[in-house]
Length: 113
Length: 114
Image (cartoon, rainbow over all chains, first blue to last red; front, side, top):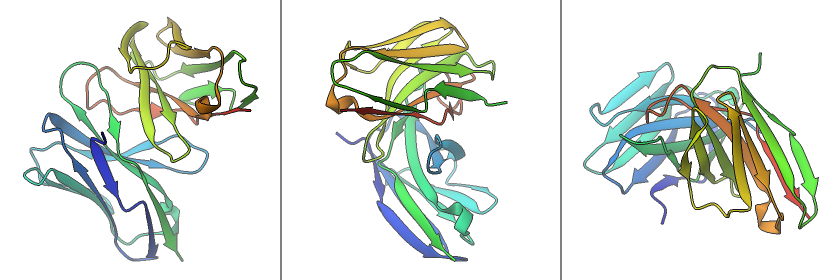
């Protein structure tokens, strides 16, 4: 049972364009939603995160949009650059107890120059 | 100045063998984890330890045995390796157990079982 579903699996965007990756979750107990970025041969690294009390969070070119009623959240990368080419994972976790991040399946993003 | 380091980076072994992966973090974090990333890049938690105490054991076969000699180290020992164990294993750490405490991952150990 996939608790966090991510789409698309792969995405190709032209340099300067907007990259959009979507995630949907099922468990309403989730209350923390991070995005991780992974380059080949490296471990994932936290990019940006959001809690459900806000509908949007922006850090530089990266924005998370959150829709609590639809149980969906998305990552927008503005002015996408070739250096943004990586695999992106959305994730979710519940408040309380030990942290147990549930990851989406990942999106392989390629930015063409 | 590597924050989370794991060794070896690559591990190739035959079915039935026993192997270990070592992990060390120099961030002063209290909590450490092992995650498994399969061939489709799906990441799943295996274990987490907080101050050397096992907190999460995510229905992993008991052939996998984590050991935390101190809060800066979390090693993973695997007995009787099977083909299906082939994956990339990531060690990670976080400041504490809080669910918003960012994970810091190592660069992974690619295990290939032949």
